[in-house]
Length: 319
Image (cartoon, rainbow, N blue to C red; front, side, top):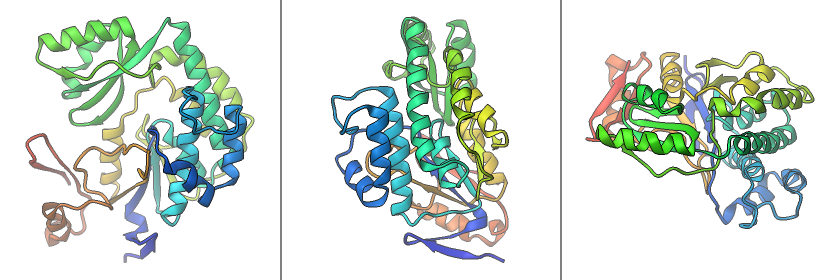
């Protein structure tokens, strides 16, 4: 029997829902105001890790501050939506820290501080390589992997059927761009100054694990999935550290959750937080008549279904 709960104006079955936290944010004027309203104590933590009073300043472009702001604001937005706490939670890359804090496994203050340390260590690792970056490639992953390996880069994020982000040195990425162009695969410009979730971050693993050892870890109130292993986080400290060099298997993890019976993907992408969900995914905030009809179909009522729309707006369903 379903136990529908309302959280922040949303109604969902807690046993068939997952809260999804993003791992990236963009500048937004309302971020500070929302944080002041919902989690003002985290402003002090942000100021401390940033080393100045205005962590939202456009002049502070450090990765450490950006990651700390993303986690702090993710928690504030989660509070603003009524703190939905279903059976599952998940975070995209950095968002794992936010998910663990929301689930009560680590403290909110530690999650923000760890985000800053993580960003600083990643920047150092990147600087040691002489410069690294990421690039989005719009093609199925099996069309990408061989070229990536040949050019000495790696898959960082597999976010959707045709949403893949590769990371590596800038030289390697530029070579890969040329190779992809030769076979008709579209790429975005190389951007970001860190090779997220790639072997280039190896030097950050041990010091981040040491920092994690300083934090108290409690059993979570929700099952927190790792998008690097596609299974629940068990050894939180070890897994968070090693996930720095593991690719984010986002699409596979979302599909795994669907197989577990998840029907509602409750995202926290307000303000400047960027949605980590593939475009067109059936989720709590956005519905398409075709998806609504699918969920109401008696033939699918007791089955887990995972729906998305491809580039030609065709509906695909995993049941």
